[in-house]
Length: 227
Image (cartoon, rainbow, N blue to C red; front, side):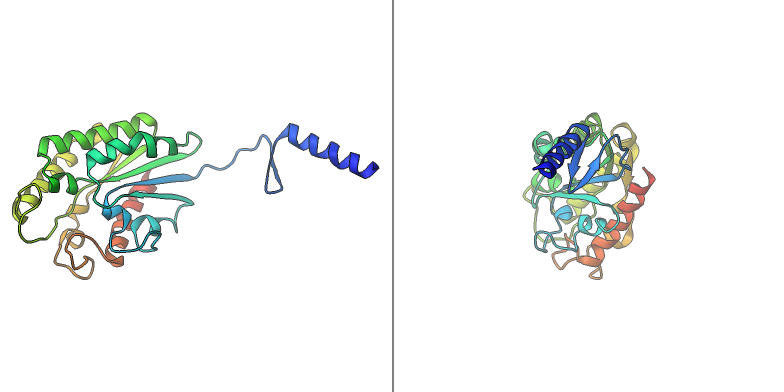
């Protein structure tokens, strides 16, 4: 009975002074800040053609460098779709006690489904501005070219579609400092942008194989490390 009372008093004392996490008392302790990386985008972020939780997507590859990387890529998602999901899915992930970073990669699907250039620009700017207002450091990735036959749902052939991507990418390069912290110029990397380069690009000429996602991961990691 004597020892039981001592144990109970010890437990009360610990409970009043701090929190017990897996047997470790954390009290008035400064936990070192770690970068938290949210990857937000379409199938290029998800890692299309691979299974959920595949080790080949660029977010999965980033996780070997950072303790907290979250993949919020959705196949087929447009920028307006990302805007619709931002406050329910992404804003609550922000942590003020660490460096919270969001990597936004979506331009291609908006043009693909038929959004005009000005609307696509506006959607990208709004999404990035929302993330900055939350407190995130924003890294914006430009859109690489796509190869395809026929026409997009928006009515563009391959040349017209990629020309529109170029216009939006150039606008992003000129104006991103007004709504983002860093830019990754994926479209200026010849290996990433060349949809016929089967060393990196999938046979569908839109997505990537593991080696291509590694190139993308390296570019994004460089910008993360600059923050």
